Image 1 (cartoon, rainbow, N blue to C red):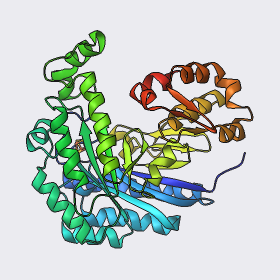
Image 2 (image 1 turned 90 degrees about the vertical axis):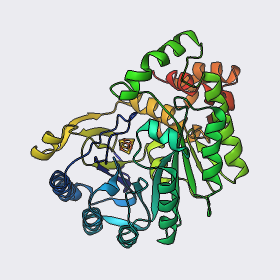
Image 3 (image 1 turned 30 degrees about the vertical axis):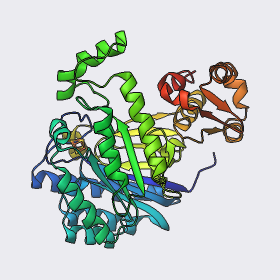
Image 4 (image 1 turned 180 degrees about the vertical axis):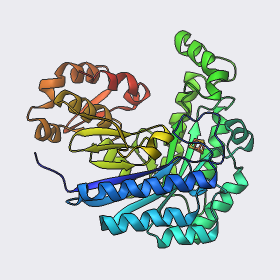
Length: 388
Ligand code: SF4
């Protein structure tokens, strides 16, 4: 088997100041000693696994969470130092760190930069304080603006801002306010991630809005307090239009960037490039084997083997992933690349699905197969058809 020698590294920091109302990520508040115990286990995992990747070069590192910046900066910098000492990290590697407003000081930002971080992702979610409150966020718009300024003052020149659409009680105009504010920051962010809220089971939002959401999906009828499907579509259209006017291009369903500022680490996920995930519940894809670490903190801290599950992907599964991950990208999936990877033309495996969706105006097929504008509106429906 040909092994790629390049890969990405994901580091999971599962701590937050408080849990947001809609969040089902592996994250929770924790005391300082609990954080320290975790960081020690994380460092040990990196040390133990690094020799397995000795033949590889690191093209990107992504420190995500949770809110990485709620832990003491010296620990995060220590993790980066450890990575630099154990791995061959390319000079041009993209090194991202997620942070939330009001969780960083000027000193911490300077330290992260010195430790190698060259891309910052800030979770704003909304520019309207009442929406932030409803979401259970720890910050307000003022906190975000101060953090954004501090990030720029610290010299970061590659910055993402996360925003959210389809929030309960949010009108299309409300959402437009957030979009306009973010795309008029000075300087404008190099990257904007604009996600639609998904009401996940097990969250306080699900308790409150789950039944309404289900009723809306079943009947297609708008429900009080939730944006209708038509409003969601308008928000999506508005995102593309306003961000295009501001100089961004949409390169993935929910991601927009200035030219050349796409997130290389995340593109790796959509293109099925190898990556190793470290930390609680972190996933890896290495040589077509997907694995996942323990999701229970106690097991992660105490077990010598941090891995909870591992599965070698069959050819069928690899083809499915190639299609439904790749179709998330605006450029779509490359037919030649498919043939190189699997030894058969895409048409031979997916002829009917490609034809049917092209005829329905949902897919555009040339050298690549890509979702059309209408196809993107029903993206999940189209992508599901590529499951064999
Ligand atoms: S800050 Fe992010 S990870 Fe933390 S609780 Fe909120 S949504 Fe979840």
